[in-house]
Image (cartoon, rainbow, N blue to C red; front, side, top):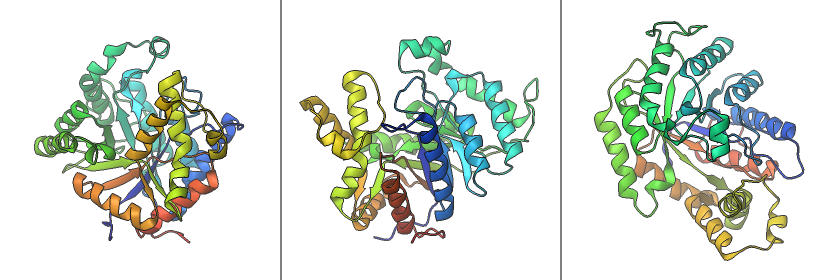
Length: 337
């Protein structure tokens, strides 16, 4: 199946790996960004997670600086900075500083999630209702980025850093009114109730108001994608993160990724097996032909302008291989062989 000629990007959560240090996890993220740049990927984003044993990426602005400093062309961004956790002025200043250091290469992906546990929310001086202020916080952030606030965020970049909203239903509505691009979860469009997800995007496109950043709606679809020589190998690539997700939902803690052989030797409850199967079912994985067919359906369902893959695994060599195979499917201009 011929895939559309659209930009292809990566979101890397800087997962920790069993037996490795946090330094090694962060270094692996930087190396992946360098490889992605060589392959011709459009963006490389990092995430924000607090107090999670299995994730080393807690400070996206700092990690963005490290990635941008070790690459030359690829756009570097956040997927995302969780605005309820921060003062909008500080977020604007961080983005502007990064833009000044790496002109024309910085994206600001913004989310509305709050900390997952009471302890994290307390440490961040936030509560569950913090997400309800997202529209107001976003408007304030945009006023700093655009130079229309009572004070000017320094260094001032003249609105050069494009904002993106990591969108659920309400987030997409806010993005449409603000004239911003959205990042949506692709599996929702091929899941049990795809009409709900399609409705979100239909309203986003219908209600979009052009802004200084975007003249038209712009949609990035995100998906967990693994391409390998066989369907079994692709499934194995996704197993470490699926197992970590199952543990987080049954034991309350997302652990470092483990090798596939170690996972298979562990005792697994029925509930954990069901959660692993659920995570794998939501992902796009298989041989090149299988993945191309499923991605084609996903991109058709979303009408996405760009695809962002969120894959991670224990084996960094296998991860580099799937990034290369996927780049080949999209015909990226980099070194895919």
